[in-house]
Image 1: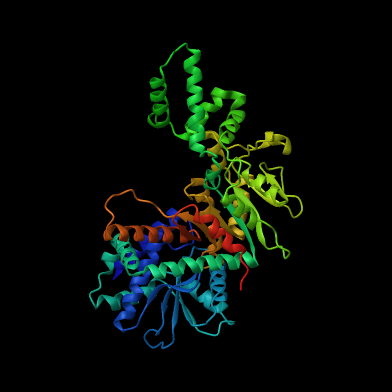
Image 2: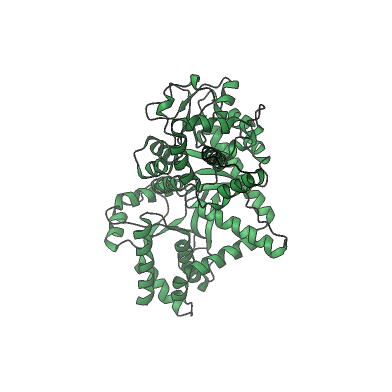
Length: 499
């Protein structure tokens, strides 16, 4: 069976070297679970992968009826190990054990650990845990391989085509999950978030979706409008007279057909408008702003009120340039500090509002040192913040994501810098936890198709489940909604008093 051993080793080596992390990805978890499940099924024993113990905490695998000579339930937990990180691995074991409420036999599956390191871990012992603890490595798995091979299970095919088999597994899993199950899971996530909000400090991460209802345009639209204004000025200065239809065509071309990304456009704008760009940005951002406060901003401000015991919202990280949040908090007499440069820190117990991409308030007289605001709207500035791990904005986000429960609102979670920081923080947290610890409110994807049938509905469910699996690897639990008008109501649940 050496060929199988080599396949798994090759898969592990590539994953560890390319990803440089201590987390097992979904495909490898699936491969291990499939192998162990097949091994148990030969003895007519049940194996449940991704067994949910409680909301946001799960076992990688669970054998309720034991295995072989073991008659009691068995918990399976998968880990990866790097040389010289034996203490960290032991710490990860202990922290996983601490989260177990009903003790059972545990088998830690660490495919790439050496036998001598297993001996070191066993010598440390798990004296405070009342049930036996075992550690399996690749040699132990190979014994299962050999046994399964006698029953014609093609493990080599599984390892060579892991992506396809994993997708098949996700599709089958989605098809057997009922709408009642999904609703129950949705409600449990909200209950768990409320429990966290009631007992701990939470950090909000806000994106452009928070300001849209107030008629604050999306950043791409702001840039496109300014870009068109700049082009109009250039045309006028060169004595070029355009008819209305020609202006309309030029606007369309500049917006959709030039091939300029928003970041490249901002680079051109910075040169074209020189020192006037910030004022131009302000003019476009606020010119159509609604006078009335939006329901979503009301909800965000209401949940931001500190309670007597000090729990609630610890800080707010926003990627928006506008001051809608500050305006809303002021209306409720909530004390805050706007943080938009390295030299600023929250004073006392005031709520910190971290504008990590910069700040362009309407009334500049209310804020000091705005000239030091790190506005991130050019290609150079964006690349600079991405490449600087010690940038105050990156450090602030990393600290919150590593040490606190964070809730994402109005964000698509596709920003590459945010993804990078999330990955770093999830690697740090994976040393301590085996659960999701952040939440994101996301609108369900909409597919524009006239062919709404049973297969299309199945595809939508599979797509949702794949997205949830992807985000779970970064420690994020997704709370879905269909329409944006539902979001304020979901946030208001946090304020309800338990009966």
